[in-house]
Image (cartoon, rainbow over all chains, first blue to last red; front, side, top):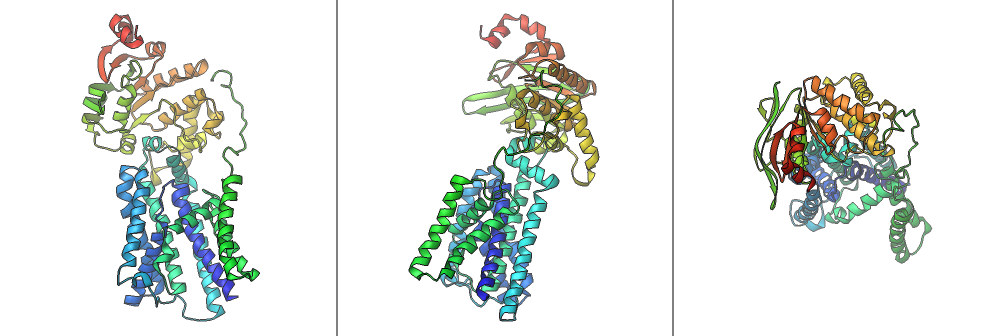
Length: 302
Length: 239
């Protein structure tokens, strides 16, 4: 049962990551691949602070979130002021450069990783694991609700308009750069939260866990679940975390299990790209009930 | 008539192409100015420079006596410069009503949601498009989108309206609606500048015409006078 609990914790953490990535690339239309590094900043920031100062772990996680938020704004501000296109280039440099610093620094544990991260819960055994499942589950639901709140109402309307036509949006008196910064900052802060929860559960993190390839995994979760849907990324995280793990229950030889997981992962992506590009919970473009109302100008306006 | 907007020696070039060459333009409250000229004359570029969509190389833009040349586009819109676009540029994922609600200048606590919706519906009523409030723009014809685009401009409630080809793709009663709306806005004291190829619309509506060619203002005066000038007619029609 501990194995199941561990999978659920990973699903919760990846739900936060995919949901926050969806806020940035889906709702915000911001092309960034630096999400894993904000995940890392949360894990390392919280781990190092709690190790060095002995502050409560919740305070450490909050610090990791703040660190990821500040770093994301520092990354996005100069590039967004020039053009949104520069963000993707800046994000590649930021992701690769910062990860190299982490890999080559003594304070971060270098390539060997950071160990002895203080646990969030000091108890051991199944009760502790299920408590952690509850905490991560709460954080995942809270992340989803935050995103839902952001993309609804006036704010959501503004986000949609900005994504549709940024220049026309600015022409109506809206500050597009500020809105993008808010979305990027909140999305990255949530990635920092996921990092903190990850580090204080596994108590050990290495730079390899935050490689640039993880942004592809997060993107896959978003695409499979449904980009620009509130619950889609959570569903994507469940499928892409749980299904490959389920293969383990088949008790196949390890030489088969690894490749099979990879095939399943790639196969799902290909399947969705061809059969359902809007994802499981997304609505196909143009799928909207047409409102029929009296139209006195129909005959006169072409 | 009080001065609302003034540009002085406004210049802009893209490489070797000069789109604005020392443009001096004044728009007064209550006045409708028609900006005419052949394609590529720099009319839309002038709108882009005034609204802040593109930065000027040199020169100044004053709105209600204050310099706004260094302000970003959204700040200029908040100060009351409201523009439409040649190709409407309504947000396709949002309903017509939502398109209008976004143009409300008041933000946050200052905004009364119910009153804003009411005002948006009132703008749609002006162009007789209330029935389309809950439709998406792509579900509507180009002409109807033009009407909604005009209603969105009015939602800003600023005192400087820049209308880029409001009549393109519009005919019949909608033509009369747009003409009436533009007249009413000017009568309310707003400065209105219209880029339009429909000369009869300009004749019918504008107090003053400004002829542009190759990024320069060639002549300012009554439209009839301009159309009688063989030189301007040749520049406009190329014959």
